[in-house]
Image (cartoon, rainbow, N blue to C red; front, side, top):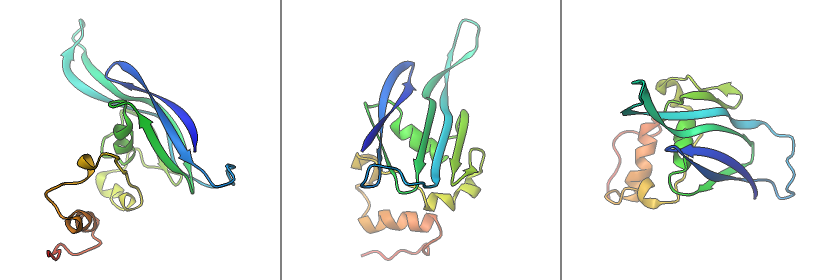
Length: 163
């Protein structure tokens, strides 16, 4: 794995996250298509606070992330708690609306796509969280958890067999 550094601003303090890309065995990139690309990706959350000029203040959760992921690569974001790893993933999936920047998937600019237009793409993209408590519901069976995604994407009828 080869590390790439990303500077991600979180809550007014600068945090450093590492991006790790898994490449082919030779360690050299064959000429492949870019699957996912972000340019100047920013996500700011508005707060109730105002500055001395009564201008609303915001928290800079993600501040200018550029990355390219090629076909066959796997990206891992590693960093301290609160540095923006999950926020980047959620923004790329358009679960959060980016404040600024461009998100391209398979050479299509998806930055301004609607929720409805994004639904088919979400079958092809995924986030995997290391912390099972943020990704698994202990009150649900494994079948229910997997079935929930299949139903949400219209890949299975709503009636899921319970055992």
